[in-house]
Image 1 (tube, rainbow over the protein chains, first blue to last red):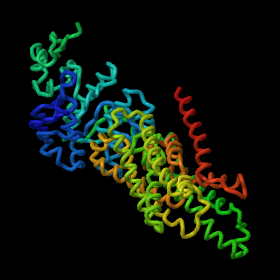
Image 2: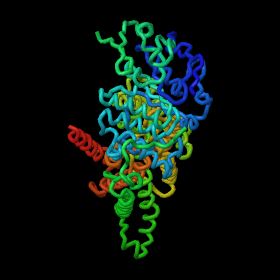
Image 3: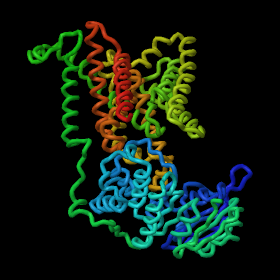
Image 4: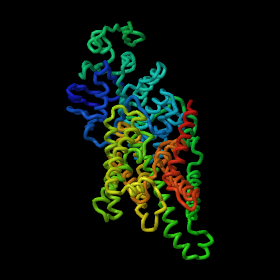
Length: 252
Length: 346
């Protein structure tokens, strides 16, 4: 369980995250949505200890992220930011292998090698294992990074806009994959996402933010309501139910 | 919580058991042995090049004069070339990982310039300073200069590939200008020049032993290889993998500064070596430091040995400083690599 208590982060005099409290339960996909500048990525960075908050606290399964040893946290949760540029030339297998670093300190065991191969197979990367990451396409590269955090084998997986730079086909594949991670492997996935319809179709829980504040939290059925979405995005969004999923129509 | 990952499609039997084919590195261990042997051969050649007549036959004949020159001059020179070549190349690799940029090395980010400034300061203030004192001061200055470069980098919002080396060159230029000014005022310009241009001709027994320190630092670099690879992926990756980013950066800073300072004090800087060698190795085996560092060390040592042999023979019996040869051969080699890479991608 991730517990967020009154987290605040201020840049200059502007609060980017403003007294956010919430809890994210174990096992399931939780999407953080909201307009640009809502503080979604900042909140995710604070939860994952990449950024220090000015006030408040975050615990993951009882571990205080600002105080617990880095190594313990690295075995508990993995974070992948958007726009990952590697300046080092690594093969896919090497990159995925570094996901095991918190477990083996750089000395891979047979069990580690198996985990690495499994993570690559799960993301359909086995064929590309010996290719250098900088020679891959954008979608393949994104999959390689996901495989790395998957090999890290943590209970919690935090992803900042994992659909960035992916086309429709790969976006759907990525969301299905995240679903499988929770359904088959029992992971807890938290992601920042822009597309409310992806959030609606694939999440168990949605956290909606605007202006640094948490506005709503609930299952897709509760969040995908015209008046709720109007509150978040300040536009009128019609909701249609298609094959059991609630889809927001906002293109015209 | 379950930890078993089941692949969506059944993996072909034994797929995980068989190590994947290393397409790019045929028999890495065998290749390394081959490379190491090549360096040994070059080292032997290097020991028999020079003005004084030291040949295998004169050594075997028990010529005492030949043996003296061999032990006092030839062996120390070859050893110092190997040690400095290895260490400067590894320092370049570590610097590139810390700056997350392929186009930096200690002589383009102000490290070498700062070390020179340090030696100048100690030479002016304490005229009879020991070699150790010079080395310590040079190291302190090198740490300060390199740290300043890394701090500036952190504050640059747009870290594109070209800005990083430009910032380094500018910083190095400013420090070098200050150094030159004071060297001019204190009539030490010629001495300064000897620190900036690597030259192994003055190496004698009793004057190169500090270089064993850089040999040890190279080994530390190898032992911490994975940390540097992780740091090269950036602060966020490093934090995610449970490592303390600042601690890794500090370790790298100390290794790079100490190597630079010791090399400048004992034989003078060899510019571009740390740029050319790691980039060459990167194209061949990639940047996984654990795999790359033995290659960087072998290439570094071999490259300087070759350049030194060239420098000693083309104007025989005169010598051209090795730094000049390295810069000339290196820039051509580097240009070739860059152009080849581009045409392969186009």
